[in-house]
Image 1 (cartoon, protein in one colour):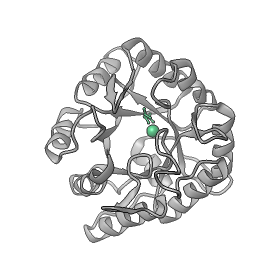
Image 2: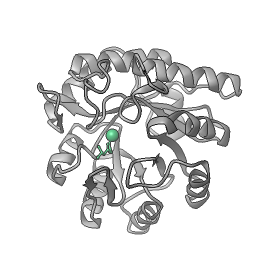
Image 3: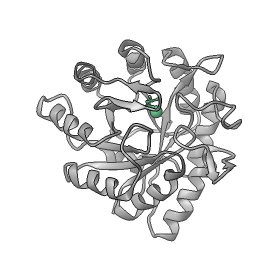
Image 4: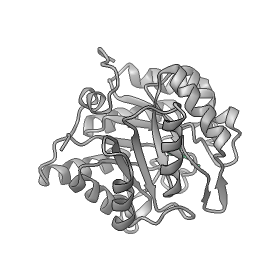
Length: 275
Ligand code: KMH
Ligand code: ZN
């Protein structure tokens, strides 16, 4: 098995400070949380921007500021969200691609998302994929339901997505695929064998699905975007605390943790010198 790549999804677009007062919101808070998670063992940071009032924003200047603050401290792989928040326009969502991050997210289908709809018609998916290809950005393909895997393979056939693909199975969103090990296994068996994959379990499913991924040879995403609790009814104190637990469990199971440089090699990203 490859070493374990841990991604931390620090903030998301939906979680609020009222949900968990430790949620990082400002660029400074987000960069500090990223550094703490890096020290705990994270290789990739998945970023969402927030404006001064705490609302989700795809403002390129906010993403630039967060990226610069992180880059000044460590060589984490920076992955920008192009999903943004429910209801944002495709133009708004894709604005941060102009920063040419190493990675960005690409959701290959539409899914109910709680009371909202996370809208990704084929024309939008193709446009986002084409721009990422032109800019040399590696997509992390976000899979909220099974048909999204078929849509990703369609992009490969159209020449808009290159193999090997890196998949993120986001399981347990209300309206999306349920967070069961059986569903995870089916997805893993459905993707091309040369792919890499990680799982992002939502809420109480974060830890058990992470453990399944560690055992199965996949990779893991944790963080407040997907889960604000450490255990039932007990809020996590930081994103790093959730990373530390994965590092401990992976150690017990004999799975080593990938540094950002090792994660770049596993994902086929170019080598990066220094920060
Ligand atoms: N906030 C969700 C609607 C992504 O980052 O690309 C979409 C999302 C996925 O968070
Ligand atoms: Zn996200």
